[in-house]
Length: 299
Ligand code: OGA
Ligand code: MN
Image 1 (cartoon, rainbow, N blue to C red):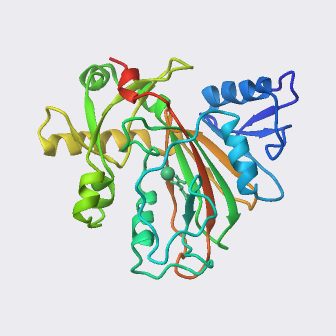
Image 2: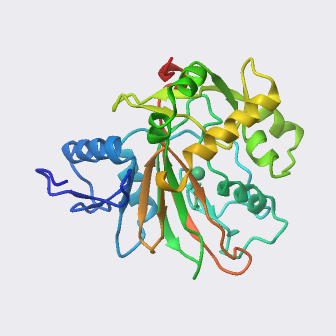
Image 3: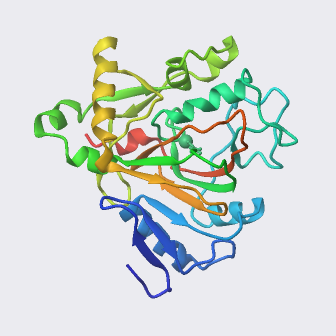
């Protein structure tokens, strides 16, 4: 797909995800180019931009801001030695402490971030969840550490009619307590208060493309009005359906890559690597949906 502005989108998978060439995302671009990128996000839901060098903090923030409004601050679990990046506006998706030393096995930030290996949608534990996430690769391990994406629109489209009817009106509760909790992570009392569950529609309508998608995430841990065992079983069944191989794009990183995904239409997960031995440094900027996802419930 090529357009008047010289951007080209090449599909990376039969279902979704494309590589975008013809724009330097390290330089400012006019709103018309931003609109082309938004239209491609509505279609592909994951875009890959490849560069020789990782973006600087300023470049990444400028690029992301040209597409929408950044998410506000939120309680984070920090490495025992404090924060590493020079700005609170980027999320530190790494196994590193300040000074770029590798986090030790028992570090809380390390254990917390292992939860990224569960399928999730970013910030689904916030009432106003994330729109796009943009993740830029600075340092990569020699093996492993890919990221996988699954298309939640196709997941919805391929459900049978009776399942669609059964789940269409359901509301789930999301919290980091549920996602990290299933891995045995424990929380302080103040974290339990800060991470109180929020309600999200199980099926949402995309504000731009109008497509329905399953709003699943490891953070989902209850369904309103449903016995707990049945709720967890249903969430597992749907997640299994949504993440079958045919609906998944696996990204193999190169330094300098920026991958941007629409959390309204996809889930993603990190894949393992030897994180006690090799550094992996990626940095994420995140746009907000701007309105509660409940406003976009499909029902
Ligand atoms: C994220 C995330 C996965 C990875 O940045 O939100 O889940 O592979 N990253 O690091
Ligand atoms: Mn994530």
